[in-house]
Structures are given as structure tokens and as C-alpha cells.
Image (cartoon, rainbow, N blue to C red; front, top):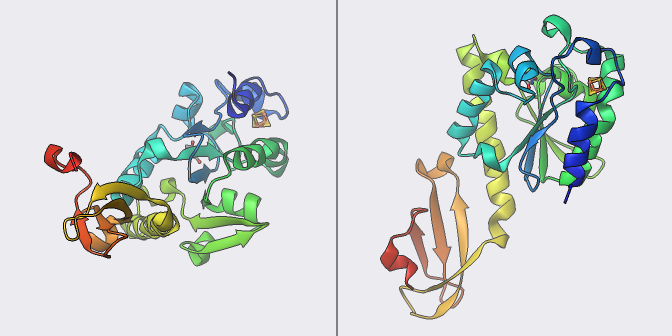
Length: 242
Ligand code: URA
Ligand code: SF4
């Protein structure tokens, strides 16, 4: 069955709503997990994205991969898209009329996926979706708008030659990962036998972000006796028999 997101992809690929369609090699639709809890929004495709027809596959994409890995966020779990879906010649900043022509697509992507948070990366996304300016003063902030939660971050490309910005971007993404961890706390349960009271109950599982524990770890809490036990994510065969 063709999903609503697939439909958008097809419309973007053949879109001629602005002049960028004349200079593109490929339009670059959003890509990623349709059930994502985060949508990451960049500016516009660059040379490599234009060649491949996929977002964030060039040097900015490599930087993004590094930042996601560092924050313990899996690229397969997120959805990645851009404000403008076709490459502006020489990677210039998209013009207002180009952003406006393309805006319906991102609004539809956000409403179909309905993520917990939309991360605007860089000034173009910050300005187009939130009317904001000066990423350097606002990065790391959560913003509520029209019942939706947004997170403001630098654009990964801005950090390519700037170690200080890399560190700030990494810290921001850890904050984002923590927000998602907190958000999911109440939801995760797993049935297992308690090591302490031996009752077989649904244990509450808290995924503690790497930022707190160095390694990603899970905390299992028995709902009978409240006994807590730390486990690393990959349980042994013996443990899975409980
Ligand atoms: N920069 C962006 O904003 N988007 C991409 O897809 C690649 C680079
Ligand atoms: Fe269509 Fe957006 Fe590409 Fe313009 S940039 S042609 S509006 S997909």
C-alpha cells in the first residue's frame, strides 16, 4: 500500500512549483522512519544530496551521523528532511519564494509523522518554521509552538571547521536524547521474574541515556516489591529464559 509519506515523496520528485526544479539533478524528499519520534530539519540539499536524491549523505551528513552516534540516537529511528527539497545553485541560501513554494511538504511530513519533537538545524529551518533568528543565541532551547515541541540546534555543516561548535552541537543532541528518554519513561514495560521477590511481573524499564551512565543501561524496576536491577541492553540467553 502506498503510504501518505510515499505520496509526498512522489509529488516532490516531480514537483515544479519553483525554479529550483530547472537546475536540480534530483529532488530530495525526506527520508527515514515513518514512526520517528524526532524529525530533523536541515536547509536544502547540497551537491551529493542532489546527485543521490537523499538528504544528508555528503559531508554534513557524515557530521550528523557522528553527532547522532555520540548522543546514542540511531539514524534508522529518525526522519530527516529539509526546508527546501531541491538544491539551490552553488548551495546558496534558499530564497523566500522557494521556501514558501516548498513549505506544504514539510508541514505535511510533520503532521503525518506526528513526532514528539522537531529539531530545527540551522538558521533557515529555525527561521522558516519558528520565525527565529540567531541560532547562536537560541541553540539548545526547546520551543513550544501550536501544540508542538521543537528543539533548536546548529546546522551540522556549520561545525565542520569549528571544534567549539562541534562540542556545543554534541551537548545539544545529548539534551535532545535525554528529553526523549524522559518522555518514554512511563511507557516501557517488560515481563520478567524479579530477582528479589521472585514474582513474575511486568517490570518498568527505564532507559538511562549514555550521558548519565557512560554506557547505555537499562534499569528494571519490579512492580511488586520495587526492587531495582541494572542491566546492559543485551541480555544473556540465561536471562532471557526468565
Ligand atoms: N545540508 C542540508 O541542509 N541538507 C542536506 O540534506 C545536506 C546538507
Ligand atoms: Fe518543488 Fe520544493 Fe523543489 Fe521547489 S524546491 S521545485 S517547491 S520540491
